[in-house]
Amino acid sequence: MPEIHQKEISEFERKASSPPPSSEIEAGYLSPLFQGPINIRSIALTGLFVYASLMVMYVAKAIMLPVFVALFLNLLFAPLVRGVEKIHIPAPFAAGGILLVLISTLTFGIIQLSTPASLWLDRAPDALQQVEHKIRSIKSSVLEMGEATKALEHMASLSESRKAQNIQVKTESLGGQLIYWTTEFILGLVSTMILLYFFLASGDLFLEKLVKVLPRFSDKRRAVEIVRGIEGNISSYLVTVTSVNVGLALATSLAMYLLGMPNPFLWGAMAGILNFIPYVGSIIGLGAVTLAAILTFEHMNVVAVVSGTYLFLTAIEGSVITPHLLGRKLTLNPVIILVSVLFWGWLWGVVGALLAVPFVASLKIICDQIEPLHSIGEFLSR
Image 1 (cartoon, rainbow, N blue to C red):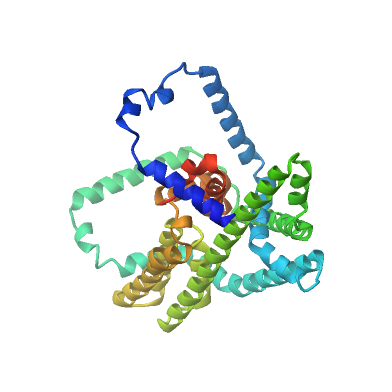
Image 2 (cartoon, rainbow, N blue to C red):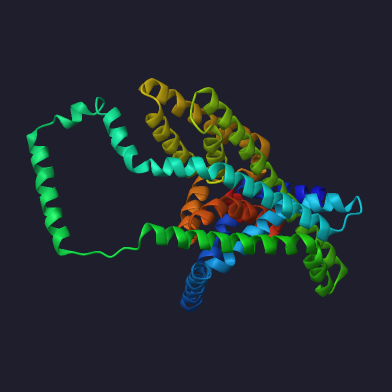
């Protein structure tokens, strides 16, 4: 299968790179793309189908999120289950052991990081005032632009205070929101773990069902090759990205420890998790580390060193290490990545943003394995 696939890709690239003969252009080589009536009804139905699908995905977020997270985790741990099966350990026992280790690791990490994270969150209300006090010397020239600006700000504040006296806004308390988010997180986590166990324990059950329903032997063989290729590539991608992010977390923790930052493992864990969201995650992490450094150190040059170190580590990971390990085959278009992060973040929140890149990578791998979809895979690549 790899040799056949490489031959097909080479042939596709040769055809795509060579321009059509002038005789074919004169004869209307591209005319089928632009001729024929436009089926407005088909376009309208397609638009309605896409809109309905998005609405279903948004409304059924509580159901679909655990399913997709469990599927990606299944692709991540499926090779490990197969390796354990080779030493005559049944898949259900291997799945149970993997799940036990995963739950224990998550529980230990949450317990260890929850206390320092809550302390930093408690300091957040006073953080902005301290930051403003420390950088007041930097922006003093801007604040001394004139009394007119102060007068305008004073008038605006008076106007806003008058409006605030006439309008009453009822908002939910922070405690109620925290209870709701915690309950939703626990329910989603339990559902994901249960689904992950059954996915891992079932092994190749769904592939066997697919082979059974296909009529011809050639179709069965082709289906097995495509599924194995997709599964292997997605598993390799997820393992590589997860390993890189773990390495980034360890390197960031060590760097923050050497620079004297408090709770270095918190910043390392934050860097590793946010790195699943390309570009946007690095910006968020840089802002959080810079704010914490301003609250920790007195001199701005030390703050600059901490921020520069964090930026250097994420830049090296994003521009050198990850592209080198993944290669061009799994290197994605940055514009597509950003659009995917914004879309899935809008649709499914933070978890959707974390799943955005695995979604795009999986789609590209599927398109690369199926010949009619090669053009879509080419658009998704860098």
